[in-house]
Image (tube, rainbow, N blue to C red):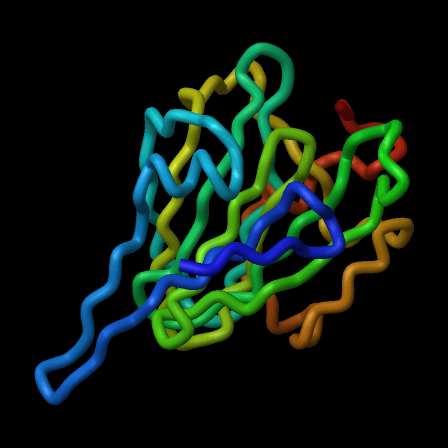
Length: 181
């Protein structure tokens, strides 16, 4: 596997070595010792999977306080535009974002540590997203950012009227009113 830093030094893109032949493919998607050596020492305690139709926008989500979570995300079917926003007040990249295309074709994974809001836009007809988390879900500590906040200025490759987003995500706070790290 290769481990590549992004504009945010602690957000890491992981590219597995894929072995393909006429039968299909095989790759190692996670190796704890190697992950600890190249990314950070963490123990994932929870896994989620979500299925989304094209143009579904989920996020930007995160947890705060003692239940803040780091995530390792990947796509097992389809393609998404992964969106990560720095919400650490003292960070030189506070309020900035990056996007990364994740797909079942490129097999990339992204490690997103505590201190970032995360979301994604489904680009394929169906997208299945997989999440490994290093802490449990806590409804009391679950929050997010409004992806349409003009201050964030997040560029999406889809017209607003074509986006499918939950009412809950539409009502997430703007950066100026959000709980931050």
